Image (cartoon, rainbow, N blue to C red; front, side):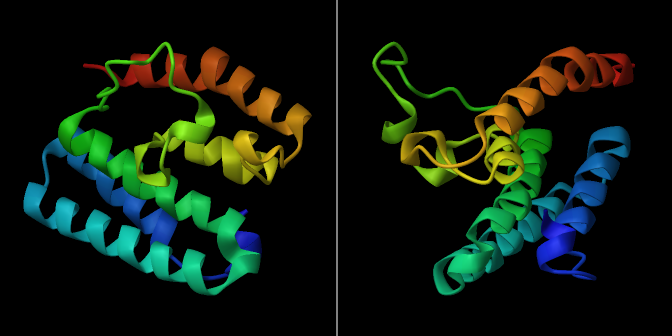
Length: 139
């Protein structure tokens, strides 16, 4: 999605490579944090100024969130998780997988946008393959 919209732009892929390197070898935490923050801000500028790039921007947001997870783990701050819906969650509260699902499907659930079959296929892949692959990476 990102490569189709912004061919040759290395932001998202580069951030994932840096996060992967950090999680495997403990690269400079401050550098990873700074790059993730810059990516988030840059992506926010793209998202706010170019409507046609809002869905592809989810890929870069997901890459930044993946870096944040590598740094601090996943945050689950909602005490009222039984009453929180997709519509209640701000963009910066959506995890990397959720942002990737938005990019793959072409829209947010709360906006009733995007391809439901693509979203479902993503989550099936996530549950059956991505999690197993991540688990296999644990030393």
